[in-house]
Image 1 (tube, one colour):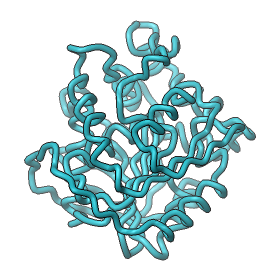
Image 2 (cartoon, one colour):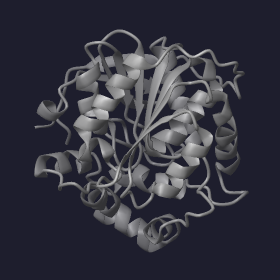
Image 3 (cartoon, helix red, strand yellow):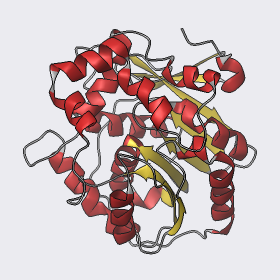
Image 4 (cartoon, helix red, strand yellow):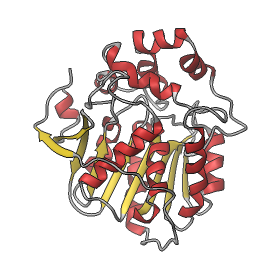
Length: 320
């Protein structure tokens, strides 16, 4: 069933002893799609199908997610910086270094914009879907459910023992109509054991809330880079019934990106590409056809040294 729902060749990047799965479909200007938590590359399947005839669609699964390896803490540092480093290594391995349309959702906003902050001159367009690239807005407290997952033993048991985070998200993340049984099962399938749910928990634990928290300064640096994209064509599509990335986050994006095209969906939730797939994809296709090459005057925030990766491919296999 998964091969039918996700009918793309599987590719793998060897990354510091772990295999990072990614989709690489089509030719043309690159569209890099970065998922969040607790989803995986499956989230972008319809957008890939819509764009692969005219663009190179690149969609990684973060380590610990989707079809990528899921090592324990001894085999991977589950931090924002590691995620950004992985994305950079993947794009460098594919020699993708210009004219990138960057599509981001959930944690993908922080990861994708972390990469963009390093190489702003490589970004041609931005597509922002229910995400953030800055600290929690002052007007938005951390939801209690996330606080429990982040800070308590109960949260660890719920997330890793019962797959509560991924399972609940597959229900509450859509609002127009429930996901079909097969789509919901595909979302949760990679997170099928205590060991395979490590990334789901580590993502939540990695949220920085105050100075001194791990990643706090990195998030501050990413937020500080956003003015560098003032001339980059930007599209924002937003489900207003998202209980985490809600109107407070959208308001911050409007402040940072006053030039952006914004489409609000009052009856949609966090998984905007499930709730309003056809409308959002239509907006993205029109936006990409209209947006002109930007001419920003930008300087890199930082550069990172990455090891030379090896790229492997293999035929599609069903998830286990």
